[in-house]
Image (cartoon, helix red, strand yellow):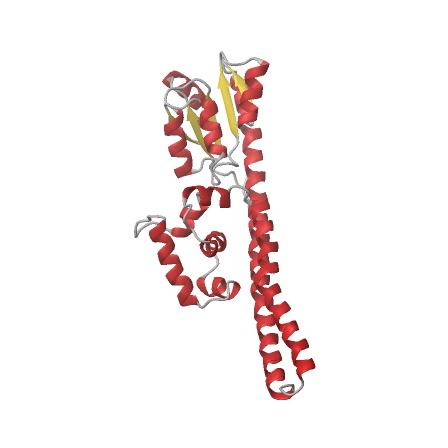
Length: 282
C-alpha cells in the first residue's frame, strides 16, 4: 500500500534455471498484479536487480553461472540492492546446515519445493511488507542525513560571519594589545578547527551508520579518489547542490562543478550517465 491507501505495483524478480518453475510461480503471483521479471541464472538476476531494483527476489539455490547463495552475497554487498528481501527456494538444499548457509548469506526467507501456492502467497506478502518498511526507514534516515548536512551549512555560515567579526575586532581595536590579540587568535584557530573537522566527523559517522557499505565500496571501486572527492560523493548522494556542498566544504561553487567533472572522468562515466544516480548504485 502507498500513502494514499492504494495498492502498489510491486516488482518481483524470479531467478531459476527451470522455466517450468518460473512459470508456476508466475501463475500463482500474477493475479495480484505484481510485475514479474525472470532470469535463468544468478548472474542475469544480479544484472536485472541492479538495474531495476525489484521489491522482492525469489531465487533457486542451484543455478548455472552464479548460484542462489552467490547471488545473494553479491546483492548484499551492493549498496543499492542490499535491502531487497530474498526468498530462497530449493528442493534439495534444505537441511539445517543449508538453511544456515542461506541465512548467513543474507536470505530473508526459505521455501521448499514443490512450492505450495498458499505458502508462496503468504511469504511473498510478508516480504513485501518488510521491503516497504525498509524503504521508509532508509528514506527517514536519508532525510535526517540531509538535515544534518544542511545544519552544517547553517552553522558554517554563522561561524564564518563570527570569524570575520573577530578579524575586524583584532585589526581595529586590539592591534597593540598582544595579550588580547593572542587570546582572540587562539579562539579563531579553535573555531576554524571545529568548523572544518568536528562537524564533518559527526556527519561522516552518521552517514556510515546509515550506509555502511557506501564508502568502503567507493574506495574499493575507485582507490585513487582523494579524501575531498570521497566527501563530495557522500554529499552528492544526498542530492545536495553545488552551492550547498561548496559552503559545507569551504569551497566556491565553481570549484565543486570542476570537482564533479573530474569525478566523472575518474569514474569513466558517459555524458548521459547521471552522477547522482550512479553514486546511489554503489
